[in-house]
Image (cartoon, rainbow, N blue to C red; front, side, top):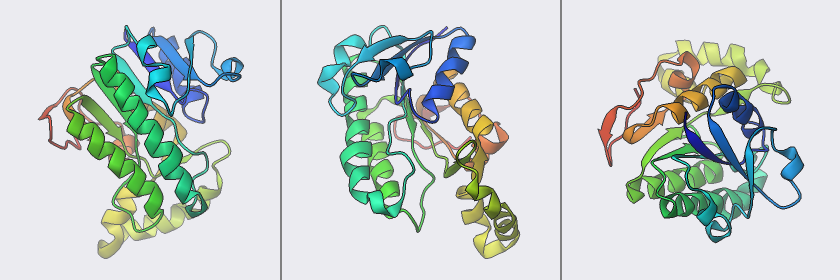
Length: 229
């Protein structure tokens, strides 16, 4: 059993991730803003605080050994560039500060596939957060989906034939695989595996690993190394 602290637990992924982890016997504590307590899945403990300000909750994280950061602007688009820096990046930095304050062993960060020629502000904010996490020396897993298919996210199914075509063409194959679409069950499975199997150093789980579910756990990569196993 792991003791897991989750930010963004009322969101699209968090609200599905928490029940899965509870079913698997883990103890979950979720950070929520005041007034959102009723939106948290039943069965987990609740801490009220501001995800943009570490000092409002960092002293309540213990005894968690794993920190899962899922805060982000919903439905990302180029029009939300300013929010990616004022919300996504600020929240990630706050979560890292809070996790280090609580001496958490493993930081799981929901990032994004990269590099990418589109959604530059979104990718840049996640990349910068990754860099700061890496520099902190904390054991971390970076989950890098591009787009998650599921309820309310079905429009992208129309792109699947184009992805299959681009995967067959050598000049576009690498990008098509790196920026591929993953299903909601695939993403949740990757999140569960990440939370349950901390690495020694930094582990990167890209789209191909999210899709096939076959990445090794606990690989000793070193503090500043990258692993896409």
